[in-house]
Length: 191
Image 1 (cartoon, rainbow, N blue to C red):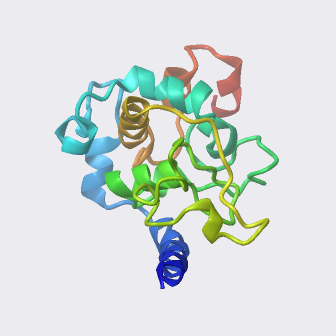
Image 2: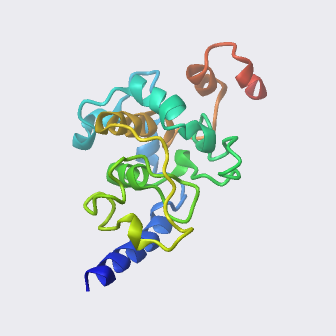
């Protein structure tokens, strides 16, 4: 019976993921409150799940630790250069995932896709990923393991994504130069 419950949990997780990653445009009020980091707007500060978040650390996790940029792109448009994502990573600028949804996807990944899990206890501790453990998956369908990081880094990463990426609209030169640096050659295509 326990095995059936675990398998059912995995099936529910797999059914939930496509709905959670639906890429409909963000609501107008979301765009208005999340589009700026440079202007000091930190809507993540109002979210109790993101208490203690450090946006600069979140950017570092996005760029260098979780390597999110390699699949999702510097601006979160889903067009990173990692061949494993094949240009089909989630378009974070338009995602409708809430804070908990983002945390769950980052912690547990998306089984059967290139989206890796980033928590060391994912699929080891059944409490972390919806009751599922690695033994619940058929060989070759197991979730991929990414670089793991701490709770504090997860909080900072999600705060960064919610503040600088989600709802930011079309990519602009100003956003590019804020991400890289003013005059960066990486932004030439936006000039």
